[in-house]
Image 1 (cartoon, each protein chain N blue to C red):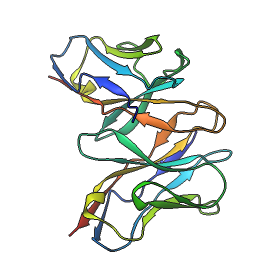
Image 2: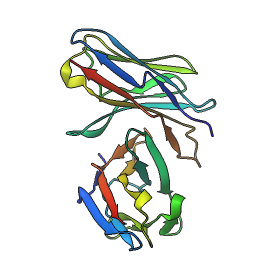
Image 3: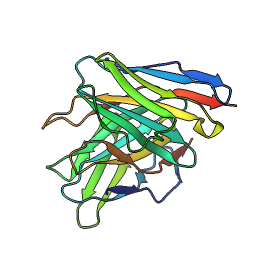
Image 4: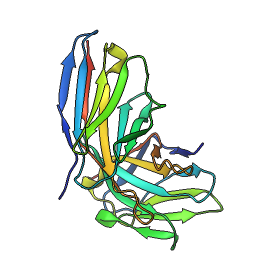
Amino acid sequence: DARVTQTPRHKVTEMGQEVTMRCQPILGHNTVFWYRQTMMQGLELLAYFRNRAPLDDSGMPKDRFSAEMPDATLATLKIQPSEPRDSAVYFCASGLVTASNYGYTFGSGTRLTVV
Amino acid sequence: AQSVAQPEDQVNVAEGNPLTVKCTYSVSGNPYLFWYVQYPNRGLQFLLKYITGDNLVKGSYGFEAEFNKSQTSFHLKKPSALVSDSALYFCAVRDSTGRRALTFGSGTRLQVQP
C-alpha cells in the first residue's frame, strides 16, 4: 500500500532550536495537509497545499512556523525558534482531491518534545 | 465555519456486544463526513465516509455509520465489538467552502473489554 512518510518519527530538542519536519506525500496526490495533535487542543489544521501552492496557513503561528513544498515529493514544516508549548505530534496527510474522491492518507506523525 | 462534536470522551463495551460512537456536526451546505481510527503511536486510518447516497455507510473492519440529516448526526456502529477495536476514534467534516480540509472532533476512546 502507498503511504505517507514522515521523518523524523521522534524529535527532542531544546527551547530556541530550529526544528524541521519532513513529509513525503503519496506520489500523484495533489493536496498536502499539516495537522498538530495535542491532548488539550485535539487535531488542529496548521496548513495545507494544493499542487504545491499554499492555500491556507491560518492555523499556524506565523512568527515561528513556516511550511513549504519545494517539490511534489517533499513538504516541510519548520519551527524557529521552538518553544515547550510546541510539543505535540505533527501529522502530514495527502490526498488526491477531485470531484469524486475525498480520501486522505495520514503519515505516522512526528512526535516533537521541546525541553 | 463547520464543527464536529463527539460528546463522549470514552465508550466502554464488552466484547461481542454492539457498539456506538456518537458524532454530531454543524456545516453549511452538504456535509461530507468521515470516521478515522487511531491506534497508539500511529497515524490516523480512514474507516469510512459519507458524501451522498445511502444513509447507512459501510466501511473497514466491519464498521458502519448512519447519517441522519434531521439530527445532524453521523454515529459510528459495529454489530459485535472486538478487543482489537480498542482505539481512539475521530469524526471529521469536510470544509464546505471548498478548502477541502478536514475539521476533526475531539475524539472518543473506545475500550472493549474481554
